Every structure is written in structure tokens, then in C-alpha cells.
Length: 272
Image (cartoon, rainbow, N blue to C red; front, side):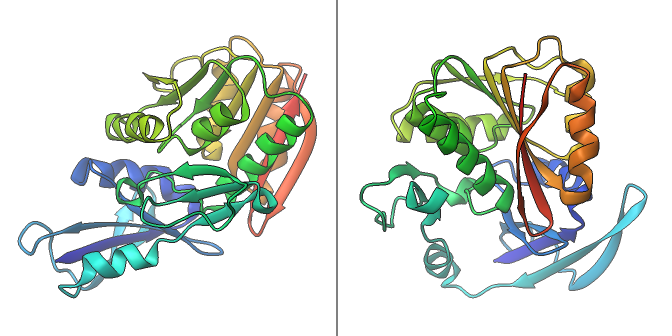
């Protein structure tokens, strides 16, 4: 078995992920560090090249590519690596189905990490969940919610379990939408899914919108926004990008009601 990994800066992540999804539509593994994101895919020898360690061009910049052989017991070791993720002070648990929840009273979300597209561990997802829980505690978990760039549908599932209805997940990648639909079914929630290019088409209207995307995509969402939601949760932002992106939505009457920071990442709650 070969593991092929591409490590890049956060602002390159969207481009790198889009390319790797074409090679591995079943899912891409994601790991993050202080100033990097790494995506990995797996395949049999002969299906993926054993390149060692090289650099390659990605747009106007370079990314680091590594490939390595992994042991025959990788499948078992991979399962051991993925454990439950506890969010929002123990209020929400996101776990693979082979792990029991460490918080029996928490909102329990089961996500297959083999499909990737987001498993709840990234700081941007954590902060979005925290804001959703806070809104629910304030009695605001009602009306329609749209999850832009839904990925594995983690945020859409959390929202549906907290009380938002109807819930719609939007993504440009068909493999992500298939994974999202399967995850919604596993968690017993009713979520609709729609394929849409958010860089060129307006986002669907809803009372609450969650958009855990990169700053370039969020800028396009702001430019194409046809109807401002009452509440807009933004993340996927580096700390130095947050205010500038918030300013793009200010023309729609949305102002910053809350900001969370975690390491190099930020999340914003905008409200009318």
C-alpha cells in the first residue's frame, strides 16, 4: 500500500483538495498543523507512484509531495488512529462508529473518517460547532439552515440535531455530497443536498447560514449573495483574513456579533 501526501499552506488547501478528490473520489485524509494542511490518499502499489519526497508547482507556489510504503497492518492501525472528538465543552461528540462516545450525555455524531471531507477535528469545524451550540442555547436553533461547503455534513448534522429545520447542505464535489448523504442517514437526520458552484452562483437563502470555506471562496459568496441571512457563521479563515472577509459581508447589513480564534484560525458570527 502507498500513501501519497501533499502538504501545502492553508490558502492553497482548496486547490490541492480539488485535485486529489479527482484521484480518490472515495475520500481524502486531512491533517493540519500551525501553518500547513496535509491531504493524503492511499492506493495499491502500481496505482500510486512511489515518489519519495519532492516539490511540485500548485498555481504560483510550491507544495511538498511525499509518498511512502505503509505496513500491511495499516488498516487496523488506521482505525486505532481515529478516536472520538469532543467539542463545545463536552456538548458534542463526533466519532467513528467503532468508538463509543466518551460523553454519554453529549450530542452524538457518527462520521466515517474513511470518507474524510471533514471529521470535526479541525479548529475551524470546532469553532463552528461551538457557535451553533451557543445559538441553540439562546433559543435561536429554528428556521432553515444552509451549510455551504458541507463536506462530510458534520455541521449540517449538528445543526439538524440541535433543532434547525429544514437543513440543506451545499457542495461542489459530488463525492463529498455522496459521503454527506450517507452520514446524514447514519445519524438519522433529514438533510437535503444540492450541488452548486458557490464561486459563480448565489448561495441558497436561509435564516441561518454556515460557511466553513476558504477566504477566496467566502469573498465570492459575499459578492454573489442575493439575500442576507439573519445569522451567518464564517470560518476556514486565517486570523489575518477574518476582518477583511467580514467587511465583504458588511455591505449586506451583516456585522460581527462574535469572533472566536484558535491558533492561526478564526470563526465569525455575523448578524443583521
